Length: 113
Image 1 (cartoon, rainbow, N blue to C red):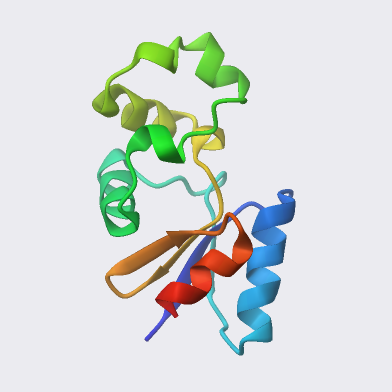
Image 2 (tube, rainbow, N blue to C red):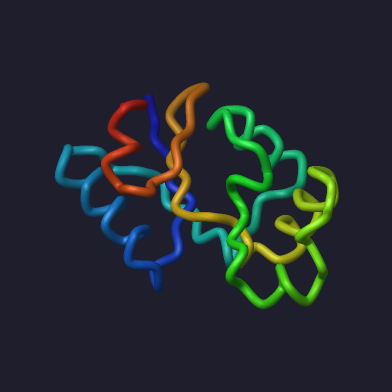
């Protein structure tokens, strides 16, 4: 079964997670989500697979979070903002089959392998 990682090569945790997968013999499909962002529908699916709410998977320290006033936003508004501003998506996300995990810490993705 294939494994996919939504990856940001500039992010330490994302690089650590990718290295961990490779160390385990996994050769994932790499999606650089800043270049190829998931749609709102894909984000909803990923969140459901991880069992996380949009608020749990959004990067609150990024400028668009503050600029767009997302502190009081609804789940739908958060998902829309994440799709339009992929820098807001917490990373990395690893997908295998019908399961997904957030690589924070990187070892947390091992549970779905």
